[in-house]
Length: 235
Image (cartoon, rainbow, N blue to C red; front, side):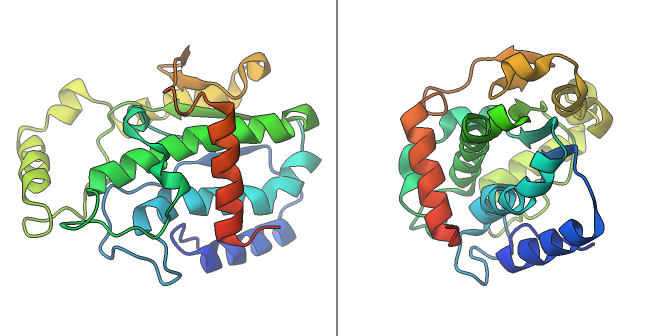
């Protein structure tokens, strides 16, 4: 089944097909992510990074929640990043913001989307944990993937030089992680027995780790949750 997380229409179509074809869902890992997009906004008007990294996951989880509850005990894992520490509460105000010369940088938009992932997991745990659906967020580490593929010389000179230099030296292979290595913490959150007592928490290197002050704010998590539902037209 095809799924484009930047398109809420695609997310709804995928969820409808999945719910019709599958009888249970034990683990949902929300892992899609980009650091830059070819187009700054989606056809539905959302800023593309927040749409892909957060809104698509939020809507998908919402649409699959009945199946997750039916399959309980089940787990939801939001793959975030240490970049979430640079996220701010600006995300509560605008999912349509313009990036670039007259707006925030792509990296800032990425950071706020990763903070939203952590806050989403916390609120999921608050609402559904007692129903047997537990939620976790994690940082997989620096992993050598194609997440920077849309950076070019013209659209972001400094980032282009940085990432191309890294590619030439290839330090990711030496000091970073392979995709297999990067998958270990998400898999730990998915499969480790007895982890329910730490549900809602943030994990790094298969251990609980302190999250940002913003993400640890119960009120802020609730505000973001309500704002997101309103933006997505969820009752």
